[in-house]
Image 1 (cartoon, rainbow, N blue to C red):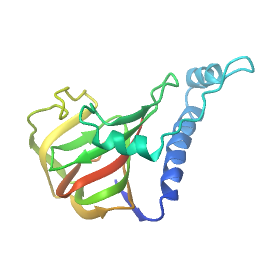
Image 2: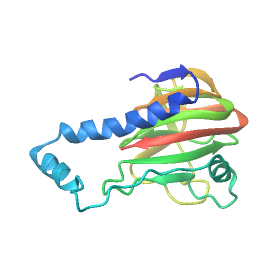
Image 3: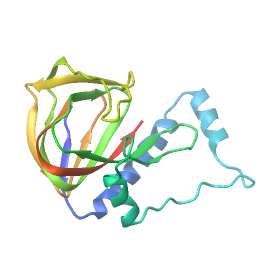
Amino acid sequence: MTIARVKFAPLLVAAIFALAAAATIAAWSQGSPAATAAQSEARPSASQPVHPAIYFSKQEVEANFVHPTRVDGALYVSDYGTRSFEVKTSTREKPLAAEIHWTYTDIIYVVKGSATLVTGGKMVGDATPRTYPDGRPFGKETTMGRSIVGGQSRHISVGDVVIIPNGLPHWFTDIEAPFWFYNVKSH
């Protein structure tokens, strides 16, 4: 597996969000007869309301990055019955554990600072603690390790977009804080 790295204008972020939604729809359209039936049932009829557009002002987004009581940085978690994606404001001040997400793809857009991102290779060591910074435990969809051996390292900074497919080990090191990034988690 590989990751994609792109340096473009912020308009690319909108395209990435659209791709995440399109991937979810494509997965539904290629599903089993049961999934196809569920998809048909999930379509709103003329009498059902359609979900509205969701907007966050620049001030709301920045407040989410720096809010002292932020739990997991979730700016938005889809409520379309499938929890098919989340939009998070994520931060790093120092390296944390290496991770593998088994059930979702991370789509990252860097907005402040920089870091070295190590991907691939082999995750080694037991990560302790196995919790988010606020103390909540990671679920079974994420495996944590102390570091990665044999991965590919690349410097990422403001404006970069990275797509990390599920199952790919990844780890942020050499952080130039504050390191802020949007993280769309597409299930």
